[in-house]
Image (spheres, rainbow, N blue to C red):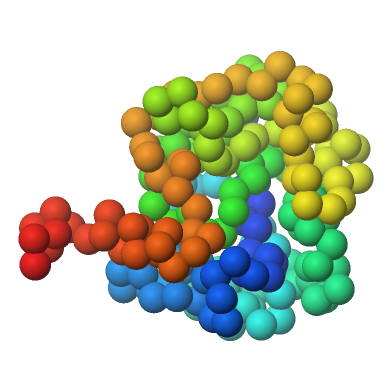
Length: 201
């Protein structure tokens, strides 16, 4: 069996749209937004690296080993999501590929991560899609290493996705679309994270 790609969990953003609190620290279910996302990542069985900042390091270490964490200086983190992706990929240069996943996607299903990882065995770029809408994670084959490590700014990896045949992996998982940017997003995620028996409470 081919080695599984490494999931690059992006947890170094400034969370500016959420307000004074950091969105990744917010309680969700029995954990936090980031903790819930990381639990899904760990359950996938794929190796992973969490790209974060010193502020969030204790939160990350509640779920992950220190060897699976890359701490960016604040000035690096401010360079944007592209730089975070490049740093995470560069930290795992020998990976079979990389799945890029924002840390604020706690409702994503483990099976969606596994499906995109599987698709990278046949495609240079793959991404999760729900009912025709593009979501996360976005996966990249190992051959794209040299391009990924030059990313910078807030554009992320869009130009790489546009340059190569990107394969949509249709999943029955609305969680591939829901990221937590605002308190309203968090309220929606909390509602959907509850067991169905508690929705009426």
